[in-house]
Image (cartoon, rainbow, N blue to C red):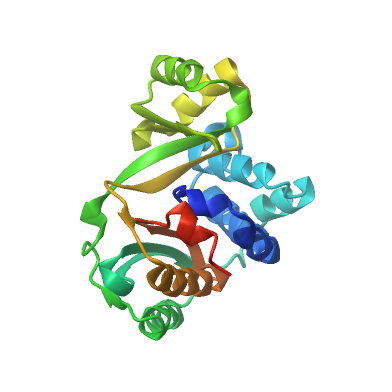
Length: 247
């Protein structure tokens, strides 16, 4: 899930994320195949593929799985995937962006719409919520890499625009077109990052109560469990006292 509200790292989410691990591998493999098919199969010559491979290594995807995904892109019978973005609202008007990669647009649209409906939300038109987000590059580092000032200095020298730091880590933001260069520069200064990717960064966050949080988490879980969905981004934040009550 893109973004990093405090609740994202609490214990109740870890079990679910472990269960989604095989799906994560499948989705990353799909991204690698599409990136290699659209560009060069050599990660050094294809920035999108390089980022996909890096993201896969970050979650310990086996090297042979990565190589198979790249080879699959060059096969004549490789599936044709369409990338599509859905935008909608969860309960209480919370904005949600869903990015999908599918070989059946009708199936994916029907599924995504049903998830929103079942959880008290509604699917909107493209552009209905994305105006509340900025499309940026995001490079993530663990807190152990250094203090906020050290990371900020390295980020600015690498060409980044902004940094967010807390007890869980550091998130460096940069223009979309600069992500590969900024990521490479940061790697030289701070070592290998946890993750480098394009994200929708919310311009502001809305705190939610327990009832709203439960309904929104149910929607996000349903979306993330769908094989066609690649990422889910939102603009809500769950206060710590509410997060501890989630099950």
